[in-house]
Length: 199
Image (cartoon, rainbow, N blue to C red; front, side, top):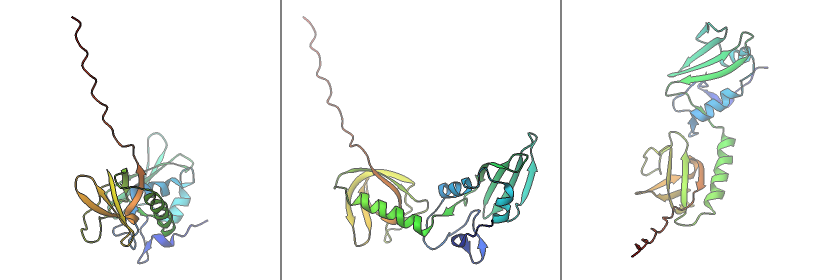
């Protein structure tokens, strides 16, 4: 059965194997891409070829396995199969080996992030993971880090951003946050009292 991926087409060209500017403001990540490729593991290579088109190259390895490689937008994607064509593993190489999250996935994640943020108090210690390629608030437009630790300051419900204090103060859009979790507040144990020397 041929799968159809309407969300992964851009101007009629499949952007499955890497993309630049992937879709309308939907984050695209390597993790999402690898998860998608994993859905083909243990399937026959014919299924992947039917869905992705013919590979750019295929090689028979000395151990009897086969490697099929697709090259798209500075991304090499390789499937390794056994002699019967069963996909054993995937590997990727390149800067644009990414895939969009679906609108439903983003909406569900945003709802979860909002629910967690609603429980936070100023000063709570947080660990935040961002979607790859997201920026800070619209005014600043700095590339957000992959992840950071900081203290929660406030949630601006109008702009749907949170402000963290991690040495400097930056605002981050909630729809750029892939995961947010409270971390234990670090406490420094008091130094032990000196033991008096015996006389």
